[in-house]
Amino acid sequence: MSKANIVVVGSSNMDIFCYTDHLPEPGETLIGDRYWMTLGGKGANQAVGARRLGAEVTLVGRVGDDLFGQRMLDNFSSHGMALDHIQVDREAGSGVALILVDKQAENSLVVVPGANMRIAPADVEAAARVLRAADVLLMQLEIPLETIQRAVDIAHEGDTLCVLNPAPARPLPDVILEKVHLLTPNQSEARVLTGIPADTLEDAEAAGQALLDKGVQTVIITLGAQGALIVRPGETTHVEGVSVDAVDTTGAGDAFTAGLAVALAEGKTLEQASRLANLAGALSATKPGAMPSLPTRDEVEAFAGAP
Ligand code: RIB
Image 1 (cartoon, rainbow, N blue to C red):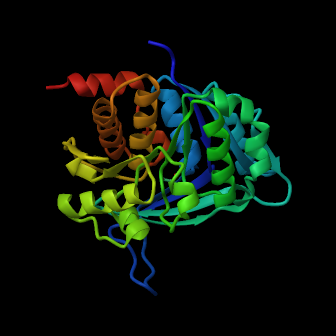
Image 2: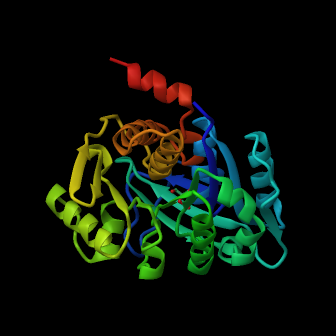
């Protein structure tokens, strides 16, 4: 089996977690249990997640010229990732996310993107050779849409599978959707993209179908503990979820997407890839934090074999 080769174009954040009994109401001040500062950002999480699952990974991104940015660069190096396509931006600070997590493992986030929103089309053009040679291009929505569009166009010059994890949700133009091979919304993101509440399997299938009608080739709607729904022309498949005792679901979507990308890059089917992705996502929810909770390949394989 050849090693998966993945390019992630995406964000890096410093995550500041506060753990509380419940999430605050508007105007309410809570006393939290503890706080934790750790590296995150959907792009960085998916890049590190794919790396832990055994892929070669290139991240195209931007960090600020500040202490957080230096921590991010050191972290990527420690994961064996080259820094060639990560710019240090002197005009904007590093991205920061404030994340509240309650006792039920529910979360609430505020992201201040900083340098992430300055990841430019020119940044992906500078990485064009790597991008065309990659098995999978992986993107999320914490960066400018024009950069996503340029990355997708370059990927189409090669044989690269374009995977877009539309998180955090925002409406997407058809010009992007029609060039995405695989879109991976969760239920609330599917609703933002289509206007269809994807609460039941039937509604999720309808939302997936609406996205196919816009030109996406395949949609995988993640359903949390219920697993994932693969919607493709003429065929819908439900891949059962994995039940765990969740302590913090932040980063579970990133673990899922990374697992999916790695497995597809290794030549696995959508069903096989979704099963591996479900395991990675479930394992991530059993640990606090986003990036620190992303599992290794050994952990996923041990979990898959567990009775
Ligand atoms: O998906 C989790 C991530 O979302 C966090 O790491 C945070 O940085 C936000 O981008």
